[in-house]
Image (spheres, protein in one colour):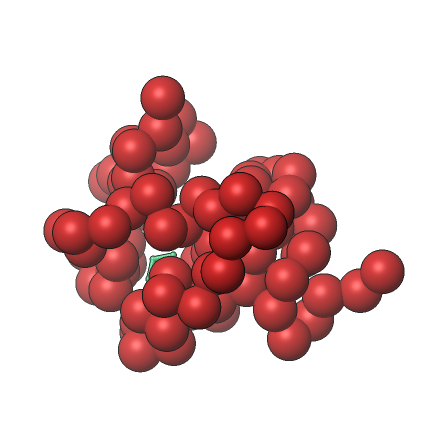
Length: 87
Ligand code: SF4
């Protein structure tokens, strides 16, 4: 089971930009993978002060991730919650 974004198999741990991730070491990593009925504001708030927010969202879209990335919630690379969500 995935417990943090940094443990995802597709995550490039060698990229130094990810060292800046605001979610690193967060005490509530499961908040980045909410059930559809659960709020995602906690994770989105941490993302909101992350210096690599844009890169993170682009990574999620390009690699078809699910969960909260770049302040938005994705499902298989598609935004389902957040400012760019579309029906
Ligand atoms: S934008 Fe959010 S999910 Fe992405 S690295 Fe930053 S804090 Fe983590």
